[in-house]
Image (cartoon, rainbow, N blue to C red; front, side, top):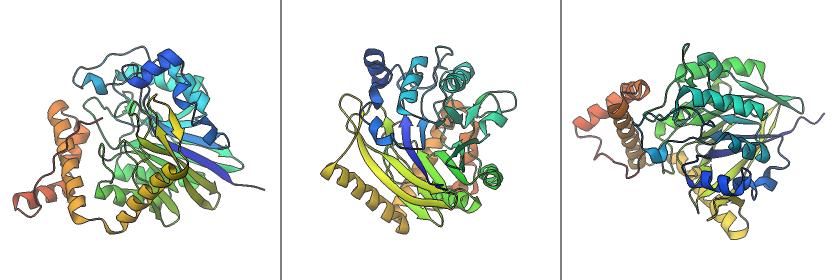
Length: 367
């Protein structure tokens, strides 16, 4: 029996009506952003991505967040997701609460009506943390999704309220171990890291490896908007960021990550380079352009073996600053929890003692 399964994963899919991709969808149809890249995934058994936009006509923005980075797409945009072939998407990201609880619940319903499963958000904590399980060629693949980056409007799912599955290290470890006992393969989606950076924050690497140790086979990351490196760790694969897949960022490099799986685990990994065109369509690259993207990913991947201390320190300072800014703006409890962690306290003590160098401040706002 052939138990080979081809999983293809992509990064952030942003379809918001107040941005360029939304304008293109209105003028050219929901499938337009995906038309050039669709042939690349035709033979995939499972297609996964991160949906960065709630789908709804309901809800309202809080007004606390920059309107330019407050997202909502028309329900018809789901037709484009169906056209591309998504089987499952993550909703565990910092934009799923942008238009409140009703818009989030509409998103879950609309996706299901289009035959697309979703992980990482729901009507309550139980649904948000529930795995999605698919079976292909006799192999069961479970998907979990967590958000580890918050905007001012990001809200956790609870017993009484809809929201996203915010990342908690201990809970994630328990859930991965539980799901692994019931499934052949476990894929964990992580919305994490910092905007417009090519490196993960150092402790992301610690968390990712820990999740592999607990039973995950693949960690699929997104949020930084740029491609980052890919790490092979033990029997698993860690893609720290797959970048923007559909976004109004013309000229940005992206990729489709192909992971060949079996009941034995990860058999092979490949990267299919792509780029967002001036017309805001994602298209595959070939020749020297494709080779350049592959070489860049290889170079970033190699850097993780010896993470430069200065780079690591800047990334950590940037992460602290980002959470501090979110908490000052919104009193977000998750951001406060990040700031109260022992590693942050130690870093701040070192800074006060003059041992951590100058702080690093980002030029770009959170996205």
